[in-house]
Amino acid sequence: MLYYQKLAKQYSIKWDHLIEVEQGMLLAFYRIANSFTDVPQLRNKVRARSYLNWLMKILTDSNKSVYHFLFARSFIRANDYGGIYIRLIVISAIILIALPDGWLQLVVLLLFMHMLTSQLSTLWYHYDTNMWVDLYPVWKHEKTEALSQLTLRLLFIMTAIQFGVLLVSSSWQVAGLGLLIGGVYSVIGSSRFVHKRRK
Image (cartoon, rainbow, N blue to C red):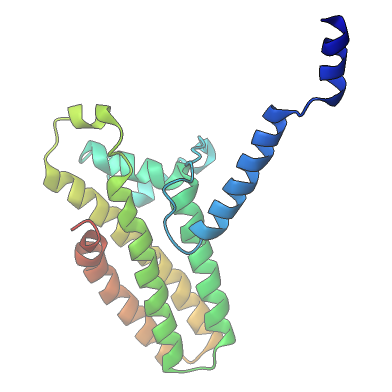
């Protein structure tokens, strides 16, 4: 027993370590794939991020219903939503600066706003696996209203940022059209497109 115990310590395969390495490689692949599509196998990481609590007042009227609070909290704490939101804004800003002045910038602006709306629509399912949420005495339309309100405010913020980018990188006519298109899409996208996916 002593002889084989010594051999096992020196020469046996460290299965625990190999499993951890394999899971790490798999998660790295899932993170890359998650940039382009939803990956259910990717475990969501939630962080407190108390330094972003001031955003709650901007993103939602949390006193209206529990879902107003939950959706805003999920957006701030979960990496899936806030991270994608910032990435889409940064990438779209870079593309808008790189493109020549004209209608193509407006197409890119609209495209990225639609991509953001599609990503935010997954918030609807965020608490489906949590049975405690079903105990809240809220109507279904309150959940719909909460998602619409959060999406509207986030799209307005994105429109304002891209308006500033267009003012710097193109003419004021294109920037004004971008502001108009962004505002119209924000209203339509938050009331219709963000709920289309779940149907």
